[in-house]
Length: 241
Image (cartoon, rainbow, N blue to C red; front, side):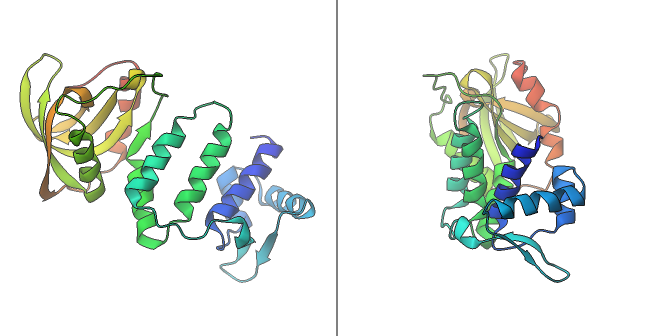
């Protein structure tokens, strides 16, 4: 990252957590530069008129005037993630950097537990490639299936699926949702722990004939187990089930 980009990112980082402060050491680790470099950057920003000030004390650091941040926002976690999905499709289009900045502000401005839940849900909804223009690929069972997946991810519940596999066979599955991914060609995929296969499997949204959210809470499984090699498989059109 060149210095100009780092200065911009520094402002956005402080704005996202305002009015809380972040130490020079934390900022240096985040941007992979020295503490002295961060201190020089902060001075340069202050001299250019950015309202950054130092908070003294053991838990102090640098903070930005809260007037440059958003007031608390009452989005639901699902609404915040819907914004995230929409903004993530900006790719390298004009204003893509501003879209990512807007997303950080929205999530940072959500108060307390709602913000924490939104950030956790956002980790489980990914969009790897922009959708093809004009392409809308719906599940076999209709739009209600997408809502069932959203609810299962949000509430961490086991999902019951009727699914047409890659060989055309209709099977019934109980799955523990991990990640909902948008991939090439406008397709969406649910990466989940399949109890029938006793392993992680990828389910393509348009092959789902039915989806019901159960009352059973899904066990906590490491997110990395769902997302390690799967994006590469989806990008190249490989579906596990």
